[in-house]
Image 1 (cartoon, one colour):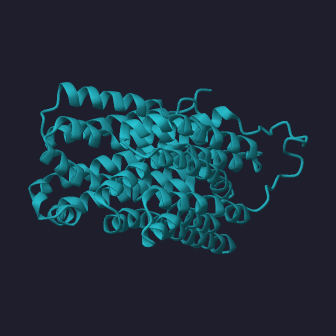
Image 2: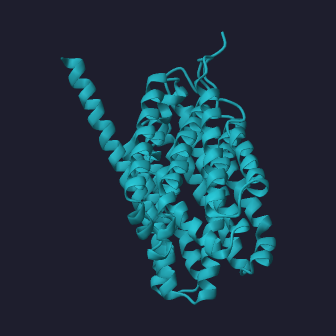
Length: 405
């Protein structure tokens, strides 16, 4: 009876954590959405284009922060202590340094003020460095504090931009204020994470021979996997822009909203289960896969039943002729949601080249779309769906096959 009550309490706590993290994710996306919406009303078209371009670059530059978070969370779940401060600082400095070195070229190629690209480098440092604190909270399974930290980080990344736009500042002023708020929230994240807690007898100065300090290779593997996930999730949209007419690529972009929805809707499951994956909990992995597959099935089914409504909400009445393709767009996202969970599992368990299958899949998708696919929405979508299915099968075989004795 006690075990049943304890198990019920654990389920309730995990459910509350899931709700909190989901709310934090929604708030983050809402703040990110407010910036271009407000910018469209406060900036000239030229300034809006510049700010939107910088924000897109910031999303790419922030990828090492996600990788750092995964690496720290997995290591902390296994070891109970990370000793990651120096490595986190180096990761943030390297990312910001590369961005700063690329600033003149980005300014020239994208017709951006140099001040914007240099500020991008500074804001990137703060964003990547924040990944350490999120990883500590995730690895400790302190999910309510993690949700709070995610909200604080979003406020730091986008709050300054929103205030700057409200005050009528230009893009440089807005990004300057956003960079300052990004740095100001770092102490708040440190407070939420608290001091590094080590298990007695472990740590760099402890006596436990099983202790293994977080290494650059682990962070690099996680960063490469995060970049691979970002690349494969946008590859079909980029190919559609290159291969289709302007109107057709616009229709594909509307359909990709359903893909992204099916992809990101169950990601809270991956976030919550990562610490258990790092400890080799196969039961947790099975349950997580079941939840993600179930969520994907529901979303694909809903798209099949209400395809007209889905496209009307995503793009308007002009795109209703593609409503029949709604379940296929959703299926691509649902399959990649499974793939992303399996990639995180491989990163968490220390597999090398965890993102390699996704890089290979990106290449396969590019070759198939360029050489085989008809130049239609349906043709590119068929290539994308086929690639997603093959990638899911390959990742399932790599991850779920019995370990060699």
